[in-house]
Image (cartoon, rainbow, N blue to C red):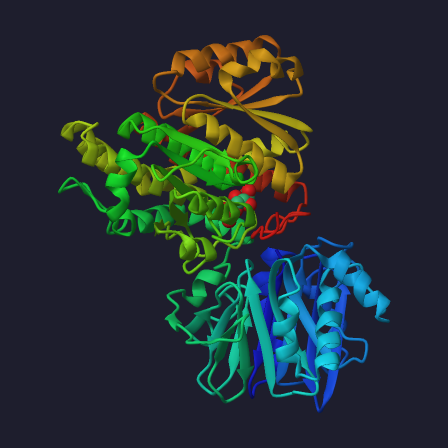
Length: 614
Ligand code: F6R
């Protein structure tokens, strides 16, 4: 949560920072602000609302300077107001600082600073940092970089920080712990800093991901210097970015979410590329191959994740248990981390995360590691914190996902988990060679089938028109389609603000059925497979109570068509691969309903893409 951008060099800092903040707006959009040093003056511009507000606010002012910091906020401490917006400034107006994270002991630090005469303007935890740095700098007579380093030993919590001072107009200082920060090394001695690489990629591909408790001292025209919090100098590890700029643009679509939904044939293909060879009957997962025997022999595989990634983990549980016959448990990372779970070296904990930065998922992994378990990661963002702390892992290769509601990341996670299940099953011998090859061929055909599902878009738009004013919705599925129902309900809730619940279809009669009347749309996955007849019975139960049925069915289905108010056909595939197809109509449906309700599809209220706070 919160996006930070900074620049130091010869160019005008403001346009670089504003453009970067727009790229990072998915991380929070409650307020935005910029600090620039111009001719020895430190100028601050900040206001509540989105980055566009800030841009309009600054348009009449002379926002100049070749060194600056910018911030887009997801509010934690204090509401989204102008004063609570970052940057925060020292009382003498010389030092400005931006922060992503939470200072957990801010209150005790604040009380101490108040006793020493510091006056707080905002309700944020961040303002404590700026006064603390100022206080140490004055007391110890050290420059602000050294004061920041010393201040961090008093701080409990998570942070990515960038600070500048008008007394040192040629340098900036940055630090991180548990919140991400990337430094881009430009060609002309200039530097770009950001919460992720998206604001940096158009200027340079040479980057350094800061590690926990590392401090970067950045001087224009000089080499990047890294120190530990204990002041030991460290050698920067420079990496080459593989991201392309076009992947960050809307590419003609009205919203990122729509673009990302339509990218799924390609993103699934990218996830399979180099890993699946149906002709030769091979699955190769380079990233985790050295851990596959460990997984096969493990007590349990524990999949930890949050939100949509947790839904992908649930699909993974069905796949791995069914094909590889390995005991799998799926845990909400936020619950797992505080539950004192029983873990040993014989457990393998696998984190699933699009961003690779989710605080609860990170903490769950750290806990598992401390108890001796092997920790693996399935992440989308290359170089993310989770991908760096795990023993090994595989990337989903879905490409940057900018829309806050996860779409292509989910299908890529499910694709990768399918490959994991198949690979483990094959190595363990729990699947026959014939079935293995049949499934590989089916999986290979999925990208083309996703294209066919996307052709139902116009029909789904019509259905959306009919149900856009619903106040509640139920989503039902059985087996591995149950997580798809959960995911469908989450998509509708988060972007259209319609209350929706996902249920295993058979659970309906244990309570939710009481909600059904002629105003209740019930979205059901009723594709051909083992539980088809059972789902048909559940549909009848809904119809008997006058509920509206919108069913996802296998191409050519006639039985459900007769009962349902609407059917959406998806191509036939093996039952275990249905989630990859059935989820797509639900994504489209939520998208169209949200657009029809004039909701902000890419940046739904109260949400942020990367949840780096607990
Ligand atoms: C919903 C959504 C969230 C994320 C969750 C975990 O559309 O995007 O529920 O899935 O915040 O995020 P990651 O996968 O980045 O760990």
